[in-house]
Length: 137
Image (tube, rainbow, N blue to C red; front, side, top):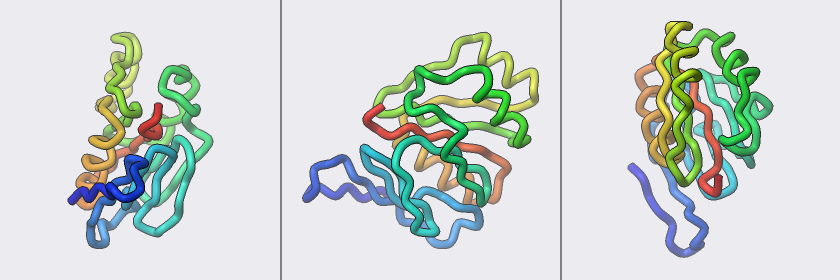
């Protein structure tokens, strides 16, 4: 369930989910993310199972490089979700093909959608990685 906090007027949203198994996103706003363990991260993050990597993603989607893609694939997820910020951005066909040749599904979507989707996937204990850029991106 998403709950928008209109009193702060900063685009803050809460995701309410009982113990999902893997770490998931509990709350997000324009600057960062709070996880189900109540740890808060400012800026972009990569979340995989119960691990958080705040150095495996640049500050903005447009700064992604092949090095980032290789580092994500080295973790061996079955799928990768990328929350691209408040606007939906797409990867190039070449980058999409790279993930498919690695046997990894890849999807890009707005960050709010990626947070909701990943929370469901984490609850199912699926082998997925999520890359989240703050909504301002």
